[in-house]
Image (tube, rainbow, N blue to C red; front, side, top):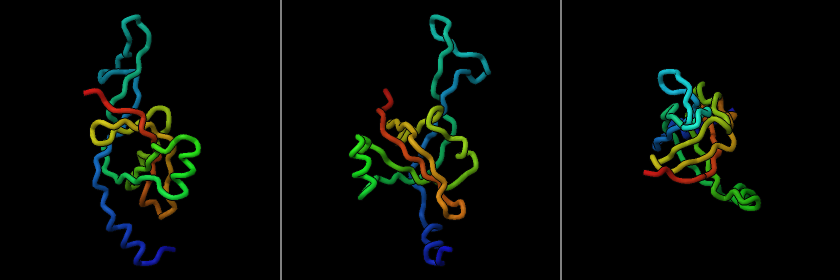
Length: 130
């Protein structure tokens, strides 16, 4: 059970960063199958949800453990829990941060705090071409 001070601290945390979650899809907005120039099915990324969250860098033992396996570019996004976040997986979804940085989702975690926060671990994989 959390103390009143810890609960108030959680309520005071404000997610200030805009995070776009994109989903890989093989159909356009009219429901038609997307095809490449040879007629093969084509998959593209489309914006799925826009949410507000907080970017957390790895530090301490988490950072050193990630550095040992070459994943020091891994970061965490702390987001207020919403039921649609349970759908997010590591294959069909990715994150766009600051409208240019692309992050591949590595893991998701519902925190054990009465369902208030949700953590997405992601690794930077590139930047959008503008």
